[in-house]
Image (cartoon, rainbow, N blue to C red; front, side):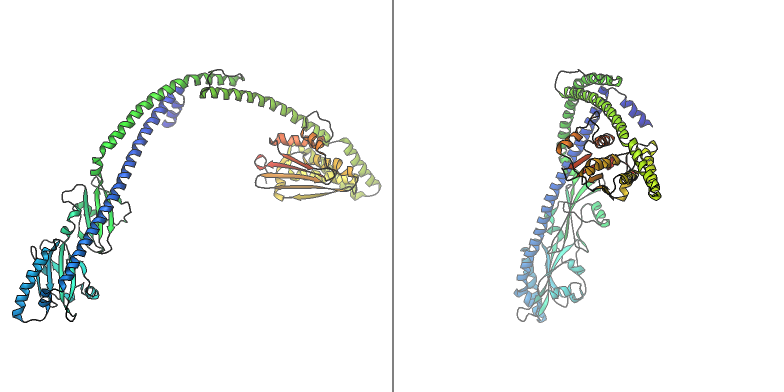
Length: 589
């Protein structure tokens, strides 16, 4: 109710006030939408740029990890066949074993210097006895045989190729409780290719991915995991907690999440060699703050545009409102029937064009009023004349004469039948004063009319009918078909001095109701057709029934091209009415 009152109060305001309110509202909406669009475009483009750069960074990290591990794998291949390794793993006596262990340990320390990323190297016998070298401390080894580990079957199936696991599948444990990538190889004898032992090279995940993130960075964070375990967690514990509880499918352009008021863009990349999942987290808010100047500049530009918009709106309002008020006052005069021209401005701008359009409209309204009055006069004249033309006394006299002849010649049944047809004809023709009747009633009028005419003109004509049943329920003006049928009989068939056919067809399509009356009479010359189309109320009475009927249909349905006539001399005449379905209606069931 309150909104309705506010709306009515606004609509009662002067046009100048309305324009001010509308302009002001549009300006604020425009500014808001522009800021929203600028921010949306800025956010989208920045997210797209971040996604591209981060994806490239993650892919580079993955390639560097693969490259580092490939280099270590190649070094390990050379390490397998060295004398120190082979001699240590062969069956030797105890005294030689101590010497070989020392030689192997020294050699492993030298090898460790050539692999900066490796933290320790271990050579192990099948029994679990081992020798190794480490930068700080050697990892602890489970007191069990390698054959009992989870990776043993995979390693033996590789036929000498290395496998990569995290902390040797739990076989090794490290003092710093951090994760290490363990490269494991099976060491075979260079003499007879029999298995001698195992090689373990441990690489710290932190050192392997040290270039991928900074511990004190507010901008980005990094996460690495396999399908079953975490290799390198996020530094941000909120991200780790969220990732544990979330199950998401990463889109190519990344996923945007919000944690504690900070928005993060997450992107995922998976390597094929290690089957590792890399997830990079970019602090979107931190980066957006670096580009806030762009938004300030955009807002300033929009504010300046707003001020100019206000000035333009006020100026336009002054230039337009006054002439419109004058034109409105001129238009109000039409309420009292004054259709004089408005004279507001001599210029040809939009208001001048509106004034000219109004003046043209006034002229056309006056013309339409005059034409409507003339049409009403023509309609009344046509209706009166067509009724006078149809209900002729001599038709009644001739019909009664034919009936009396049938009675005196003792053809009582025919006489009775004609009396019934004559009564039905006049009953339906009068139609209790209704001006609009159904097509079925109109067809019945024609049938009774032609039955009476067959008594007067035996063997002169036959009548045929082709109806679409549902079309007979449409309503049309009264006495439309009978004048056309009478015209076909008297002006088409009888002048041929031979028998003829009158055919009536009624059907519909998707848009029109079609009424067609066809005969095979003498037809009409082009000049006769021209006289029919140039019908006027004071025209001669010859063929008046046809011309008057066409005129009635044009006026009733307000359709100038409602009728077509196809006729040639000695080839008959076909008259077709095409009535738009949206301008007629069916009889209620």
